[in-house]
Amino acid sequence: MNILFDRDGSVGYITLNRPEKRNALNSEMLIQLREVLSDVSRDDSIKVVILRGSEGNFCSGHDLSELLKEPMDVKRHFELCGAVMHAIRGLPQPVIAEVEGYAVAGGCQLVAVCDLAIASEDAKFGLPGIKLGVFCFTPAVFVSRNISVKRAFELAITGELIDAKTALDWGLINRVVPKDELEEATKELAGKIARFSFEAVSAGKRFFYSQLEMNEFGALAYGINTIALHSVSKSAREGIKAFFEKRR
Image (cartoon, rainbow, N blue to C red; front, side):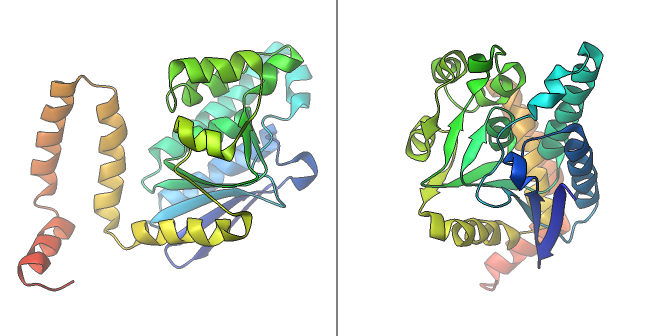
């Protein structure tokens, strides 16, 4: 299988599993990934998802053999990738990218579309397609919405890679840890989220990305309506009651 799934309590683990290709994305892999994400979206016992790569690399981008096909086949491949991006962003559960090794081109796009990202000190990020005569058209979409426009254009137009510290400084990832601490640090962050109500977390993720597309006062109005609706939810009523009763 190109995609592996397992779980530890309320944390789901999705592993990209083409280590011989540095976990490069081919169409079969994208189909499997979309199916796993669909299954996870229907399971509210899973409260957070960790996305990682196998054997020392996160993802080296798209399998270049996919780009040598006829244009309509290339289009279908990237539509599959687009469906995966929609699935990650639309997933009720937050998704944390656990990044080591290479996260470039489509792999960098995956990091950018995830809700959170932790990287090991050895991680490398970039949009190197220009070096092969193909601008990283689709990866640039999400990367340019994570970091400043000029930083994103620099990555895409030079094809140069950046290290984890630079990715942190630019805002592409949340934190950098030593390689031998990566798994534990990601698990710790997932555990912080998994403590909370699935209803509250999923509603918060949906609201957060929706309001980003609005102007400030439109977003505020949306927030007012949303909090009014969620104030009567079971999790909100129980949480507030517990606060006043000084219990967990």
